[in-house]
Image (cartoon, rainbow, N blue to C red; front, side, top):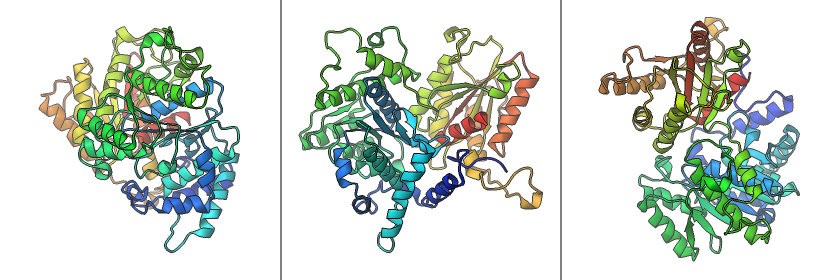
Length: 509
């Protein structure tokens, strides 16, 4: 696939591409274990902090620290947006990135510039290269990025508050080197990364509760009892009152909608408001705090919540190529759901926004379609996920909401094969792409259709396709839409944030 950018590669300098190559070298086959989330060589983080002289700078950061299974990225996004609207200079560290690694480091709501990113990268890289080797290896990918975030946020003197999203778990996450955050939050918990965090909600909650600190206020949302009891026990051991936050009341926003779509976002917004209120209080900014007698939130809070933006979560993107042909008949609905719980939320959102009665004519966020529409699923998930838990949840929730898919497309992520050659290359130079995983996803899907006795109205033998690459699937969608201009094609892209990022990159290009 000549000419297709590597994941995270921006059109920029050769030096920037060299930086991305160095970063890629930190990705290992044992990437999940190497992140340290099992505690593997956790003590190395202290060594890295010493090498980079980051212990004191980190201690000075005014941190909001958020863990969770679902909604932690949205909660961080809401919190950062509110704090920025309140006039504070913000740093936001999230993961994963969708199109460019610089998305993980946001200063005042904007991705860090290429120039700054390169400068900070080489400073950290060279210091670590000079001091590692033997018993102290170079940090793995996520650990390096977390260290880089700490360097950026501590050196950028204008950063008043750093909002940190836990990468995976909590106890042994690279962000958990922060010993004294201002406030901690734990979003909704569920079954994810079980190969690392444990097989029960209690075990998973125990790992997430690892970010709680003595003397640091802690908030969570309503949780299953098994998880909540573990969180409360850990908070009790630390002498910290764990406060349970309820979903934000839409009336508190006046007539403004949340910037992130979906009913579930009111829960994340409620957690973000609680975290920000406590951060403001502990930093002495009582003048901005939400007055308890007020029906609505302060204007700064409403502005922050309504302007929050997070790519790849409940995002609607009309195909630019079709728009250039004066046709909006191909619309992509992107959501990086990859757990059963988030898949259910994604299915409810897609069902809601594509229902004719729930759409607003002329709205860019919710394009208005007539009754002649086709629902297409574009899906992939990582092999560590269980499609027998994801796809039934998606299909059943859509069916409960009156939505049936007309076709399902299964593809490898574009980023998976970005170095394997092009379809334009001579056959001798092409690398055979392994589609065994995508074919297994298709079998699961068709098995579900058979077990439902074809209740979606499609012939199970023709209701799905496997494509060798994502560009070929996009090409097929565009050609099909072009040939059927009286029909609107509504494509749900889900199962993997990597897939969502790859689709966004292709549409942008």
